[in-house]
Length: 66
Image 1: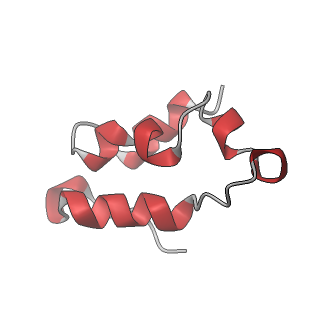
Image 2: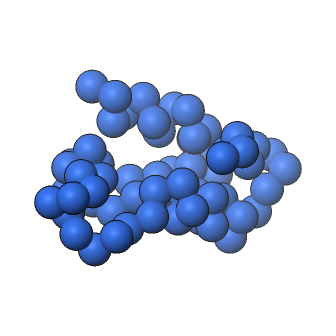
C-alpha cells in the first residue's frame, strides 16, 4: 500500500478513496476488528479530519494507537 496522499496535493475524494482502500469494511466485525480499533466508528468517520484536510493521516492515526 502506498503512503497516504498529502493534504496539500490531494482532494477530498482522493483521501476518502485512500481510507476506504486502506481499511476496507468486510461487514463482519467479529473477524475484522476495525470498528473496535476505531471505537465503534467506521474508517471514514474515524479519518474525517484527514479526509476534510484538517489534520494529517499520521496525526489522526495517533488517536487510535492508544
